[in-house]
Length: 515
Image (cartoon, rainbow, N blue to C red; front, side, top):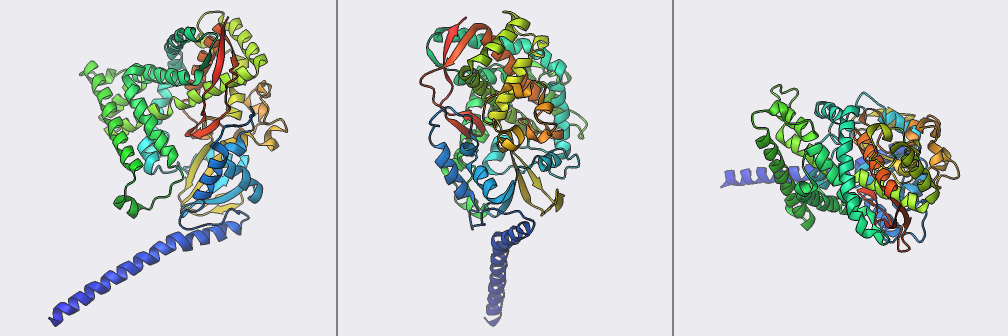
């Protein structure tokens, strides 16, 4: 009995020591370390809202965003920065161009100085890798090109560069035009009536992605798009939620259960798409097709493991393109039509140029490269309404950035919208739609400041779909301008919202007039 008692006391002591160690470790990570980092950054002149356990500043940010974005704007104004990113707008004025915030106990450094952003994004030594995807974002994007690093990224980036190369894009022009033609046939029934073009742009861009990247139709991929849209909505809803790992395992929310269900459904549907292609190309994996899916399948069956990818990696790549590949173009088209409807003088300039280089024929790859006015309009649209409003990077080890020393395990946020709406860069007319800013190109417009305008990123990680998106937008806008004049409907509501992508929440309601 004495021996049993000694053993029980020993085990109890071990348990107490383990619990004590766990408590000390927990307090160190959620109290001591945040305060140490806060003091260290403060000593370098980097201030910010005070750290608050357990949520950091997430509740504060969520409240600020809901106060500004829960209602539409009273009038049509392009001054959307304080509305979309009220925390960045307020805290840059309170704490300076660079400031520190907290997501739970994780430090987030917001950087709005162009030179520092250029230093971060143009770095070729992987000093500032992509931020790790967690929770809902990982379910949505997985380990794909837009999130990966190192060899995983290099393998697929090389493939994507080939798929979206200039020559490949030329071959896609007829398919893009055919998709736009199908959309415009349906528009005939809306002539002279109020019509929300934004919904149709969503269908158009998903159809184009399906045809050009996956060799299918929108209807074949419809179920995947719908599931991705639902998962995107859940991700956006929970973007400022703080979950503790231990608690998340024991107590799962309805959103977590639904997200897992959607993730499984998306994976199953993509596998079906792959099986269909394999049946079509049975025994000919080297000839799986020249589109993105075909190129991915070649990597999947590559015998050299240094070049191959796994089935899970392939699914993530397809899922990411389905999810993010069409949203940027949808946003760009929606805001472009809004701006041209609101500024008819530029609509006429764009139409005149399209008729000069394309006539009444569908745009060719050569013609769209000559649309200088269209380029100016699209650049100014992406300046005022960039599809992606923030870029992130992480600090894995202590680094020197400008005059600052950044500790490991810090996340860097670069708010694109803040730079694009900065009067110090663009002048007092920063909130006015002036495509002529870009008359002599982006370099001249930004005074050779590369980080002043970066809607598709900067440096070696610039979005591979940049030319794909702008080509599709030029083709769609050209074909619309050939056929229609359009004005904003009296019922148009200006409702810019950050829903993963900068989106007109109430759509873009216009009245079409056939030419």
